Length: 476
Image (cartoon, rainbow, N blue to C red; front, top):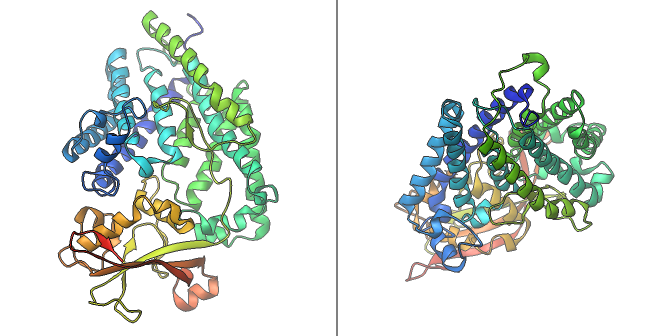
C-alpha cells in the first residue's frame, strides 16, 4: 500500500528507537541493582509471596512460572544487554522479523518485572515505557519505511500523556486554576534536584507564567499534534522545550525524558534531511500492523472515556499487558514538605538523649546541609516511596516495618540502597526509630549564614523505637 509507510520520518524513527533503547537500558539497570532489597526472595515485598496470591492472568510475567533471585538478575541483565544492543543500532542490522523479535523480547522482559514489582513499580512512567516499547515493535527498521499508523499511535500516546496531565491539574487542585501551584511545588515535589531551590525562589510572577505556560502546553498544544506539518512538528518541539524545563527543576525518573522521546517522531525533520530510501513493507508486516492498530484503537476506548470523565483517573492500566493506559501527575500539590528521618542507636535502652544516628538516603532530603543531587533519569525507588511515607502512614504500611527490620539486621542489600549508613553491616543498631520533620528551602541569607540548604522543624514521632525480638521480628 502506497500510503502505508512515510519516508520523511525515517530520522524521527531512528532517534525514537535509539533513545527509547537508552531508557530501557536505565530501567533494566535500576531493576538489576535494586531488586534484592525491594522484591527479592528476602526483600520487603517478595515476589514469591505476590505470585502466590496473584495469578498469571492478572499479572502475566515470567516470574509467575519460576522465581529465584538469580533468575530475576539474569532477566534484568539480559534486558540491559538487549537494550544496549538496540541502542547501538543492532535492530537496523537484522532482518525485519528478527528486529521485531528483539524489541518484543525487551518489552516482555520489562513487563515481567513491572507486573511483579508491586508498590515499587506503581509509577506512571513504568506503563508509559511499556506502551511506547510495544509500539516500537511495529515501527520497523531500515528494511521498511516508518508505518504511518504506528506514527499516529505514537502521537495518540503523547497526546494522552500531555492532555491527561493537563486535565488532571485543571480539574484538581484549585491552585492550578489560580496559577499559584508553583509557589509550593518546586519545594514539595518528591525529589528536588540541584536547581529546585533556585526555581522555588523565583519571583511569584514568574511562577504564574510557568503555570500558564504549562496549561498551554498540556491543554492546547497536544491537539496540534494531529495537524499537518510544520504545525505538528512545532507542537512537538514546544513539548520538548517544556519537558527540558521540568528536567532542570526536579528529579522525575525517566518521565520527562521519555515524553521527549515520544515527541521525536512528530518533529518535521524531513524538510531538513531530504528524502530517504523507502523500500516499502512486506505484506505480512502490513497485515500485522493493521491488526495491531485495530486492537489498540479498540483498547483506547476506556482511556479516551477517562479523559472526558469528571472522575478522571491518573496512571491507570486497563489490561494486564498495559497496552493502552491513562496518565497524569500532580492533580494536587502539597503546601508543606514532610520528611521521615530514620535513626538508629546502639544503646541498650532507647532514650531521647541516646546517641541517635541518622541513615541518609541517596536522593531524599535528610541532612539539611546536603544540597539536592541530580539522579533522573535513573529511578531511586526507595527514595521516591519515602516521599509518599511522609504524606501518609498508609503508604508505609505494606513495607516500612520490613525496611526497619532489615536495618536492624544489617541487611547488605538494603544498606546498598542508602547513601550513608551510620552502623556497619556487621554491627547493626539495637534500636531504630523514625521521626517526622517539616522541611523548607533555606532563604539566601540562611544558606549564606548556616550553609544549610534546608531548614527543618520536628513535627512528631513517626515510628517508636523498635528492636528485634528473639525470632528476629521487629518489636517496639
